Each structure stands twice: as structure tokens, then as C-alpha cells.
Image (cartoon, rainbow, N blue to C red):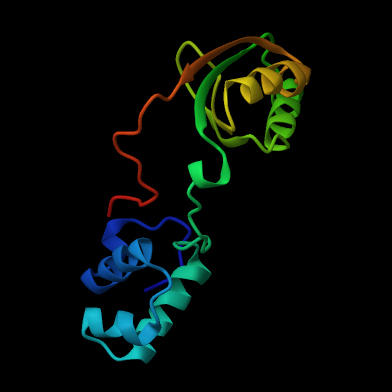
Amino acid sequence: MKKTDNYSLENLDMVDLKLLRILQNNAKLTTKEIAARVNLSPTPVYERIRRFEKEGLIEKYTAIVNAEKVGKKLTVFCNITLKEHTKEIGNKFVKDIVSLKEVVECYNISGDYDFLLKIMVDDMKHYQSFVINELGSVKNIGSAHSTFVIGVIKHSYTVPI
């Protein structure tokens, strides 16, 4: 397979796809365990995984922490509209948002809003403090519309492949 920054499903064979699915489900498996699941020896499995990492298909490995067990019991989706839209203002907004630990995801979106933030906090009182003291200090926010998660129906970290 040639090196490319634009991978697509066409660039991956069935073994590659199976390997990626296995790793998304449990990246702590040993190469030997993964090899047994794809009917290959450990060496080619190891080489494929290293290629995925080198080519950027696998960005990083991480542990998924149970938010509730570490006190983050409230998840909020916050739609943000900026007052002005210039390159400098947009870059400053992004820099400020990235620095806020409560903001766990930020998307630049189309439609009625400019950004969608996923925020995780302890409770409503923590969110109120966050809005006043942290989000309120970010310049150029025209409006913020918060939606509170009351129950999670489906949540996944995997990419459908």
C-alpha cells in the first residue's frame, strides 16, 4: 500500500478493516491475540498496526474514563454564535475555547450557530459558574444556547468502518 494522507475504504483490505475494528473495540489486546482473531501471524499484524500509526489512521491510544464515576455528572451541548466573523477573532475564540478543560469537544458548524461545544461538569451549579467565569470571559460570543443531556441513548467512540 502506498503512503497517502487521504485513506479511504478502497485503500484498506478486509484484514486491515478487521484489525481496525478489533483495535477500536479493545486496543489493549496483544499482537498475538489480535493475530489469532485475524488468522495471521503476529509479525504481519504488528507491521500493519505500525503502518496504521505511521499513516495516521490510528491517531492515538487512550483510556475511556467513566465520567460519572469521576464526578462529571452533567453533559451540556452549547451552541455558540459569534458577534463578528474575522480570521483573527475566530482564531482567538478557538484558542480560548481549547484552553477550557470543561470543553471536551468543539465543532465549527454550519447553520444558525457557529460552534457546538460539548461541556462536562459536576452539576448545574458548576455549569453556572463555568458560564459566568469561564465562557463569559471569552470575547466575541454573541449568544450561547445550552441543551442539557438528561439521558444517553447511544454513545460510541468508534468510527463506523
